[in-house]
Picture (tube, one colour):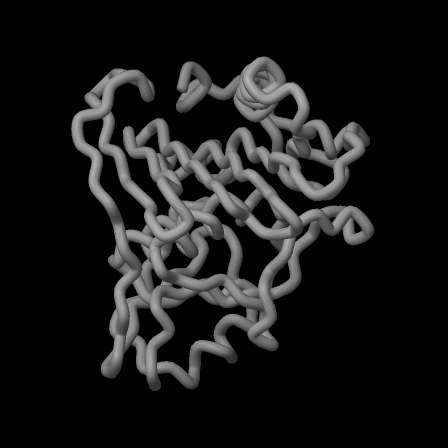
Length: 245
C-alpha cells in the first residue's frame, strides 16, 4: 500500500506484462514468512518464476501471486489482491485472498467452508471487524450475473456468452472475480484469455469450498503444477452452483 498511487518503477517482464516494486517487495515478504512457517513446502511464486527460479516440487507446494491485478494497481483502481494457495496432488485445497485497498480477506476455512473477513479501517490486515461464512448461489432459472475482466476480453468470451441469458455484466479486477462468485453475488466467469496458475489457484480453492466449480471447457478439473506448460492455465469456466439453463 505504500506504493499504491505513488509508483516510481514500472517495468515489463519477458511476457510483456507489467511489474512494479510493489510486486517484488510483497513477494519477498511472503517468501520469507512461508519459509519460516512451512520450511518443507516449496513455493512457486510469480516474480521468482519470471527470473527462472523454480524450486523442485512434487505433490505439495504453494502458489503465490504477490500482486494480482497489477494493471488495476497501476491504474489506481482498488481491485488488486494478494493470492496464496496450497496445492496437493494437483488440486487447490487451500486459498487466501487479501484485498488490502478494500480491507477484505477471503479464505478457505474447511474443505466445504469459505469465509469473508472485513478488516478494521487502516489496520492493514491486523484486526478483523467481521467474519462470516460465504456460499456460492444456485441459479435454477432466469438471467445470470456474469463477470468479465477489466483488462482482458476476447472474441471467444463474447461468443461463449451469447448463448446465455445475461442480466448484468460486471467488470472486476484480479482474483476478486472468484470471491464474488464464492460470496453469492455473481453466477458465471468464463475465461478464455491467458492466465497463470498463481492467478487462479487461491480463488479456485475459495470458490470450491463455497460450493462453486472451476472446470475446463470439457468439464474436467482445472489442475495445478503444470511445469511443462510454464504454469499456464487452459481456458476455464468458473461459476457458482451450476445453473440449469
